[in-house]
Length: 55
Image 1 (cartoon, one colour):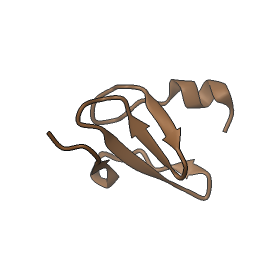
Image 2 (cartoon, helix red, strand yellow):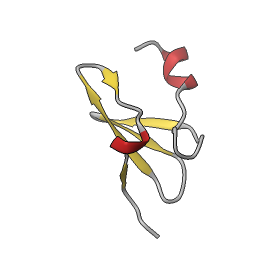
Image 3 (tube, helix red, strand yellow):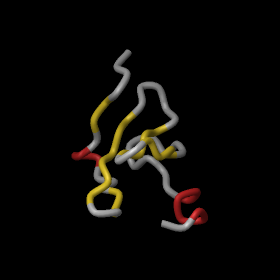
């Protein structure tokens, strides 16, 4: 995925920036939300999000 597309990605739950961490994108929010990447395609569906640091 090109840099400009990655820079435009936002968390569908919070609207915050996403950072790639291995095979996931993680939101910059607190709590953070993690979205998987399947075959190079980020799955940015709120129903697929996993909370990674619950408050």
